[in-house]
Image 1: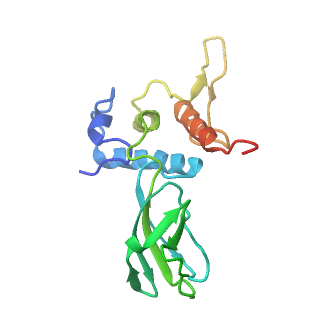
Image 2: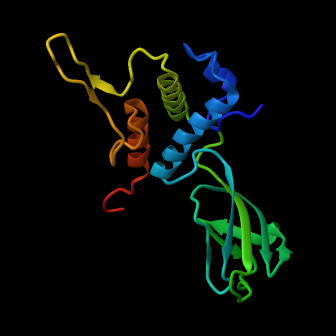
Length: 192
């Protein structure tokens, strides 16, 4: 059984009104939110594998922050012993100080990067509940949409929904608040 990235199917199915949802729909809905979270934060929350190709004449600077390990490196198709390399701040160098072999797209680096070993509780919870709310609203079983910020009353009041936008990437208030908090915590301090 496959699980969503941030929580298990069993954890999700234990939420109120969620026992009837199957693995494929849970995984799909959770992936929708996971992708938004990591895009908006600008980093993988949990370890993921990446592969990048570089020109040998240029510095090898990895695109992903929070490097955990370098799995493999090839230069002109020949494997390099990763124990002969050092990496700091996303830059990979030979321990000996030698330069990369000149070439175009001749260095391939496969590595693992992710901010946390497991998903932080606040992100996990917010993604689980957003996934629940999305699946319930799509199934028609939900009595009130969590994005509803006001309702129409008998006197003709208006309904207003929180919709996705620049400052609210998902439209789900709890998840958008977690994303905003994570963005703030990663922003560089002024003057540093």
